[in-house]
Amino acid sequence: MQTVERVVIEWVEGPAPAIQAPPILGAGAVASFTGIVRPTEDHRPLLALHYSRYDPMAQRELHRIAEYALARHRLLFVQFIHSIGRVDAGEASLQLLVAAAHRKPAIAAIDEIIDAMKRDVPIWKMPVYAEDRGQGT
Amino acid sequence: MRVDVLLFGPQAAMAQADSIVVELNTVTATVSQVLSALREAAPALASSLDTSRLAVNHAYACADDYITRDDEVALIGMVSGG
Image (cartoon, rainbow over the protein chains, first blue to last red):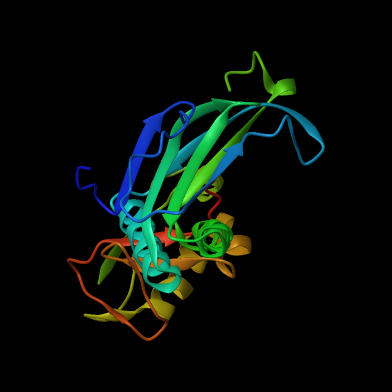
């Protein structure tokens, strides 16, 4: 089994593709979360979200959150794939995968990592509303 | 002292700018002083500043932290990743 980095962060233009978990020595549980663009925002039909970030701070903050989760939950592996640019409604904008020796820390870590992301990682989304179509958005 | 504050996402749209220059009558300034100056320099951002933080050199800064001329300063409003 080859050695893998314990934290992997990828940014992709457009929808975030599903993560295929690499073989992780000692893992007894792999948990994942997929964030999907909802079809409405503020009760208005939504075509897409447009994601932007402040780099390198976004990368640094994701890494900090992952390192904290690795230590707190004794995780073995954390991987993010986050979208930049346009992601249509129904498409994935975030893929998060964690691996641990046991189920409970893996599942708990997913929730905590998402909460920390939404608090601290400088990523923004701008809505593209259906009603604005044809108005240059 | 001039501080160029970078703007992103909804706040860049609100200010219709990617950055705002604030002027202070000091050689150095604290984060809270820059935020106060920003409130005056960009009234369009005022409503969002209470829920915003400043990042200095790509890390969140405290209100009493000092900013110097060569620092990279960014306004981080409500973030919304995921």
